[in-house]
Image (cartoon, rainbow, N blue to C red; front, side):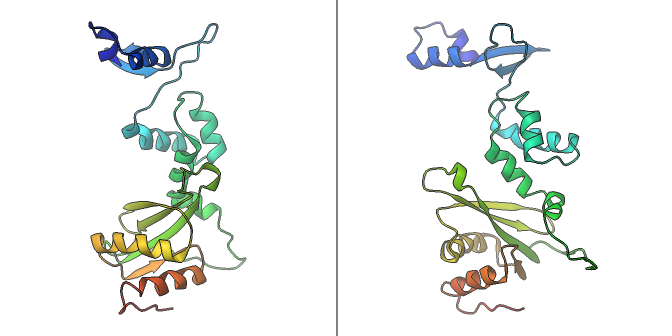
Length: 209
């Protein structure tokens, strides 16, 4: 944006589009990309860089005491214009505390924490439904996470079939190696279907209950 502002030669149509859509705010010699402030509106909305999105989401989530999606969106939309519901939902899907809040625990059931001793000893695969905010043909996101390190791999999916999940899992497993235990919150039947389809690529694979 600064390059466009300081460009001496004739500006291109895209340059004028950028100048109309964005503005620059300088704070302590640091340039911030913002949206033009309308008349009688003192609220400044920033355009956050992709590399800073996670930190912004994390700070907002913590400041709200692990607040949910609607509270986060209300807080973030007062400061940033390009934070989407999709990004907030994806962040919340990776927060273990938030996931525990949404799980129904039977009365009298004692829940023991799952402890992993090393990388790839236990991993989890789950699906996020984004049909309401689909990216063309991609309507679901597969989230693969290592329990110990919280390392995450995400894959866009067109469907939530076990066949497509297994196909994308193979790509991850050939890169990181197969975990000792693979679990899913989508239910045992779904897990069994994944393993059955994985056996098409990996005949020696076995499921242990």
